[in-house]
Length: 304
Length: 269
Image (cartoon, rainbow over all chains, first blue to last red; front, top):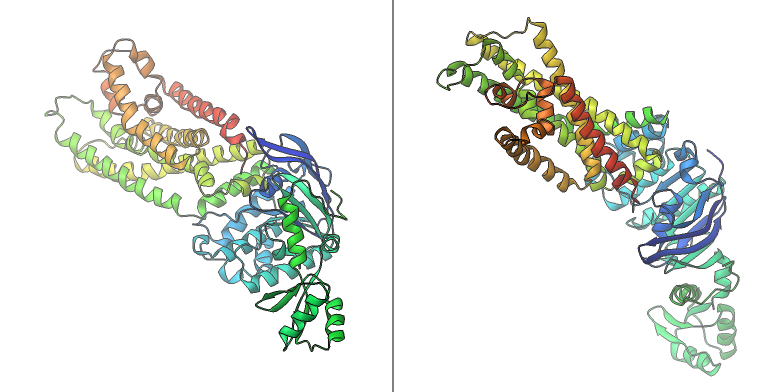
């Protein structure tokens, strides 16, 4: 494995004609961490990643990997692995696809079997890709990215199309890779999708940077709420309302914009027994949506 | 070295899908049938056709069915080596492995040449393999003991190789698969035959007509309907064989160069 490198976006801008797809992106992505690259569809995530990989030219600014633009990296696939859209020639088997890429990148053929094994694709390796499910294509894309045993992984929406078991697998897989010191950049349009995986987040919307920083800081900025329920739901609702925190009824019980410990104290004081009490992530999701929706908003604790 | 790696990858791509052998089988059958057909037609009815063919012209004409009917195959194969990557959105992966795009294009050009030559050999297996026995059975000379015939076969292989190169040039010039194939078929099957026929009859066009790709390819091979009957019509003689080869190569380089500075440099989105 090559060592994880720092990715630097330095004033990266891309215009397609009059349309600014990405404007003046400035952020860094550190090794040893999983960084989520978040934003709604059309925010400019894919364009940004493709500029980093030299597939799309920048209008101005530079995106570098360990200080170099992609084309200047000798044997780039041994330093940087990328999976962008999981598209392959449908008539070629997964194994043949990997063999071809390995040849082009000057990577020993022995790696083909290794990455097939690593991504759980060995049983399907000799089938033609045309018959693969989206989840299998995603795994083959990831296998392609891993061919060179790179220190940097750039994955565009890698969770799309995976089944729940696949999602659990990729989360722990990416975590393990980051723990080995690699740089992992993963894009997604859903915070909830990567929330359990990422250490840092970069949020863009409308081609502009909205937030850079630790996920924990974003969580800190978000108002935390609780989901709570009681056999005597009416009494619980009354107690919360009396304390000035109007609850909402949902399928799981009552949600309230109050930390669980406060909810517990109120219930104890009112003598209402609880059947469930948990922190709700809605606060973070709301914070994320607000970031993405409001161009002038910057989150507290962010480095943006 | 990245060119060697890229070339090796191109052959890896070619031989891991079915296109190359499907085209080879069709080419073999098509050229073989054409060679047998022309062999029979001309051995049985040369006088009735009203054209007096020299004895040593029949075998070259039969053998050159490889290029006369089969030259579209290497063009299409060469063009598909580019357009299939665009169509299946695999160009991104290719450029991630080989970021210097000129290297990728050079590897595709080399693979197009070599595969064209392979199709030349496959075509000859059809045109000589099926044509020579027909000639022999009808008491005609096969000329296979003649060194000139083997030079002809060599030029046929070279012509097919150059057509493969032209195909790669066309593919990068017109990366749309459907656009590329329609252009190739329309030009080779309709536009150029029409232009060449017009050139044979219209004063002043004949000079230009010699430089059409198909005319240049025929000049390189040195035996085809157009060149055989060129003696019958007035007008400038076809190009020398080596001039024909250079003209074909020039078309390939021209198409490829225009494509290289236009479509090939585009953002891969």
